[in-house]
Amino acid sequence: MVEYLERPPLPELAGVVRTVWLQRTGGEPYVQRHLPTGGVEIHWPVGGAPRLLGPLTAPQVEVIPPDTTIVGVRFRPGAAPPLPAGLDELADQHLGLAQLWAADPVEEAVALARTPAEALTALQRHLVREFRRAGGPDRLVGEAVQVLMPWHPLGVDAVAEHLSLSVSQLRRRCLHAVGMSPKVLQRTLRFQGFLALAQSGAVASGRRGADGTAGLAIDAGYADQAHLSRECLRLTGLTPSRLLGGDLDRCACGHDHFASYAPFLAGRRRPPPRR
Image 1 (cartoon, rainbow, N blue to C red):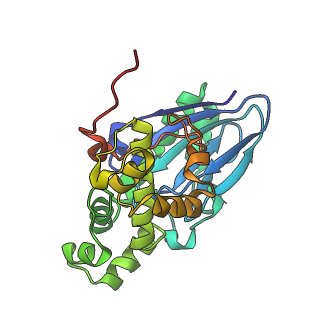
Image 2 (image 1 turned 90 degrees about the horizontal axis):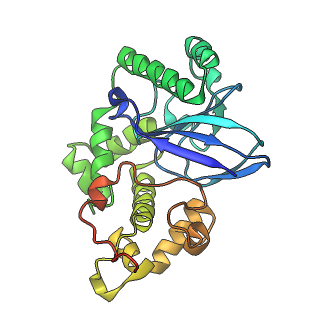
């Protein structure tokens, strides 16, 4: 039995971290499907070495050993922890954090933690210090991320104009700070928005007479259900039905997709409770 628990980050990290989490595998190896989210993640097995999961443009499948406990931090797009390299050099890679980060002080703090929850707090406190030392993320890229969200149906040219940047400048800054082009990021955020709608139990708005999955696909910004299916295969390696598997509370990656999507979900109509 795999346990997975998400919680909000420390308040000082709320602007850069989507969520922090704890995961425990059971007595058998666990196949974890990592999906693109637009951001990077730190995965720290208790008693093991920390790793950075770079920004993904395609799914990655990892086999986690049995009886493993991992603490993790999932960053917002464009808000990676201070690193010596641009994220365009780290895309689709799973790297030892020691290769990128002078982590000795936090390694000792995590090793001395009495519980996984304490280890997660120690990691977060180290991140607070790192961000204060290095300064915050690129503000223009942060604004670009917000206007590329699925509730802002803008093209990349319009986003660049909104930010008073050329399209090439926006692309260069996104590649460095996010690890992908604005267009790829927009597609990733749109898909995550669809998953958030599906998992929230939202009722489709009924635009164009569509309902169910097809309606939610249109609400998330897809042309139709076929468009969603193509993007789902590209980003997850699975069809929407296989990814969600009839259990919207937990998709095949094992995570929820609510963090960062509150504006998209606010006020959405839910189906009436079953009697």
